[in-house]
Length: 468
Ligand code: AMP
Image (cartoon, rainbow, N blue to C red; front, side, top):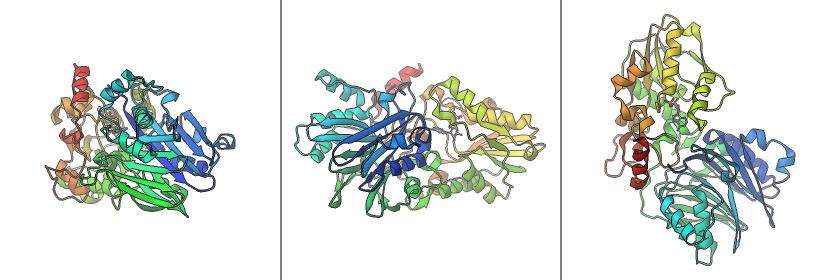
């Protein structure tokens, strides 16, 4: 399986202390990737780079590091990889000195035709320093025969397929690009006169920047000393953003398409209560990501909301650890039971999703051990039956519990009294969309439907091969 990444990107053009603001922006995007962080700044003459494994707050919180990143322009990246390639060389932004000057690139998403491209590039003499698909973009730009940088980038983009939200910095420009389907997010903001690009609006809020608009699918925005320009690379392409950003991945205080992620998640819980009426005493969220949906479920059902599980905040996201052994250990360290709100109660646990079933298994057990009479497990999204190849980490088919088991089996495996999922229609309704358009779906929702917007047949064949 190729490298898969979850990431956050940030860039700012022409402001004092650009790298300090980038550090703050990356800190707000830390939930998007926790294994490595990097910043490249430009001081009008020279590019400077610092890349570290680990958290932003552990690595960029001191003057001695930030002093190495002078200038009024900077871009940054937080990264998470799943395939063991979590070494420093893969930490972004990637940087190269091209014929026209320095070129720094930060990428969120996953390309789907990397094998073919990499093979072709290597066969014709390219030397790769990393295993990251982003380096392919760099190589394609470097080798383009076009003379202008923008045309070189366009040339590279015409050869890549997959999901990409990119922030590029050259000695003259800050550039933001979204793939034709707009799968991964990218927003444009402004702090005083300085333009900002970021994966989510929470990064704009962090630095006191105003939200201007979302970068559109298939759009390239080019920021220079003379202002901002937009080029539509895929003019008539329809947008299909990733639905999982709203369900789980984005931060609840971010705004997507005019609505807070928190509201979408509450709506998901509300829909779940409408679809599944369960007689119970308390609604308990699986912290933290299940909380908004649990509030929605509680409000719609009238069943009181209680914090029955307490999260230890000094452990990262369960999933975010690359190896299964560490992941299981992480789950154990992460949650403990609040017995007083559970004992002798009929409990409805609410989480946003079940992937492998590791978390569900553990929290259900916890509830019974604490004296719960019944434990119903409600999930505020449909069963995840298909892996992702566009930048959200989900495992291969063999590890996805819902790809291999029906609801009755899942109920037995996790040991719950009952298990219930939100329907796909209910999920769309929670997003304010009455009906999924089967021909041109409004979202990238293949995790639930198997409807992959970009050809992944090569990767799927590999994925199935790994399963067997
Ligand atoms: P699992 O324990 O394998 O069933 O994973 C489900 C839990 O992980 C839920 O609590 C989700 O909130 C969370 N989750 C779902 N998808 C992801 C993801 N792509 N990365 C990290 N965590 C996730």
